[in-house]
Amino acid sequence: MTLKLFDAFGIEMEYMLVDRDTLGVRPVADSLLAILTGGNMASDYEAGPITWSNELALHIIELKTTLPVTKIGSLPSQFETAIRKLRPAMDRLNIRLLPTAMHPWMNPAVETILWPHENHEIYRTYDRIFNCKSHGWANVQSVHLNLPFDGDDEFARLHAAVRLVLPILPALTASSPIVDGQYTGKADSRMQHYADHCKAMPSLTGRLVPEPLFDEASYRSEVFDKIAKDVRPHDPQGVLEVDFLNSRGAIARFDRGSIELRVMDVQEYPGADVSICAAAIAVIKSLVAQQWSTTELQKTASTDSLRAILDQVTVSAENALIDNADFLAMFDIQKSSCTARQLWGVLLERVRRDDTALANLYAPIEIIMEQGTLATRIRTSLGENFDHEELHNVYDQIADCLDTWEPFQP
Image 1: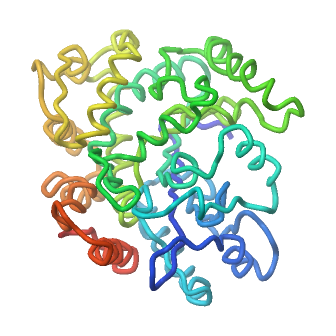
Image 2: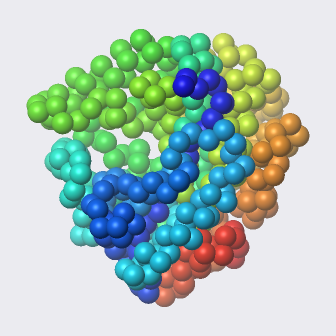
């Protein structure tokens, strides 16, 4: 069945498996999945509408919709049920799930163990080319939102809108202010490490914000053909598939007719992630419907200007100053500048009126708008100076949010 624009959605979110007592990473995803599958060594476990899986690193587990869903409002309860059912298996291993986009003190050079089972040859090839024992590969937990399209016309409209929303999403989602046990100076450190994780082959990530390409032929020529040329000398056996190497902040998946957004840090509990995804969908839908600007005008946004906004938001999240009047005009905001929080305030006020799903899921976003991103709330909790015990205690509280299904509030 072919899905048209906004017919359905797919959401994936990644968590770290950590020791229940120390919160140190535990590379036991294969053991956990084996418990779930009754002893079978598989990279995924399908539990009705939700699937658990692993990719690349053994301390990471992914939670995702088994199939695209037509009603996003049902997802929080489905994710909550899936996490609750996982707990007996985690208890056997004395582990828990740790949210946020980066482990605050993991040493990836020492602690990363790659998945050794199914598809391991793919991960070994990645490791040989890029060195996956780094923060950019092994310590970047994100949420992926998949939006469908059918044909070049729908792709063009969707891609134009996604490129505009991409740079401002970390203003809602930033959750990674600490790496190697200390503040990095960035609210969204994951974006910095993700931007650099393919530096051995820059064509894979491009400028993170995808190029202004609006049909499949142009996209394949400008993106996939360049990736294929660059990867060939490093992968003479052809282990890696070109379509899966694209690592931009939003990637076109023509094989399944969708665009996958990858710039969102994972939150403290899935209810917040789903709420943010609902907000992103509502704003993208309004742009596609040309409520605030025409698709032709949206297409003119330059990759460099959008990347500059993404860089600002990566550092300051909701407090980033957006002083690009042309960008703001795409959202029908006639100002020379405003903060990212102010921009989202205007957009959310507009879309909530007509989007019942977002209105019903809005409570977690209200916390973000009032108290700041999870990154801001972590800083508020820790203060300027902290020791390891205080850091452990704060992240233990954040992990508790998955059990209590509540937002983290300092």
